[in-house]
Image 1 (spheres, rainbow, N blue to C red):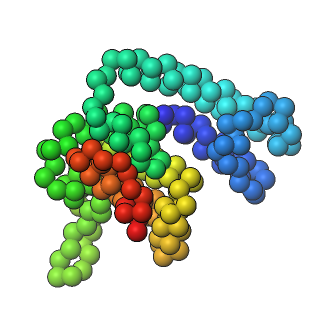
Image 2: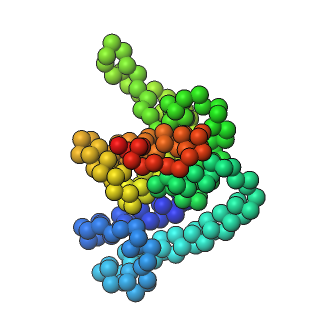
Length: 206
């Protein structure tokens, strides 16, 4: 998944550097070799894009194959079904969150879970002044990745979450705003898994 995303971002960067415009992920996924040639005037750049597309599509096939094997072998918990109701979370992210979380009961409070997912800030404060960041590597890097991925999907397809993201982005910048969405989603997933209830976007992003 990481490599697939890296190839997609490489194509977006090549397009932006050579045209000054942006290209959506959905459009990239549908590109044909002929369309790539029409988008780029330099043959070498078009060749690089085609290579990235070829690798990305090969990885997509491998991911689907691995997902099928995992689904056949993993015993799904009831929480899995409820995780699928969360905006931005599909089969792969739900599996990742379920497996990496383990027993949700080991987290006494929602804040403990959000911290374990690396979805909260880590700062050292002394006398009201910021003295630097703490150990940001504590917690689970796979859950951190999963919730950031979910946040990126959620802002595309859920209007309420998109508005929350835009408000945050207006006050800071995109990376911090995405982390704020990831934090909200991690907190929502704690209750979804603990109580085995569907996701309520209005309640989570009110």
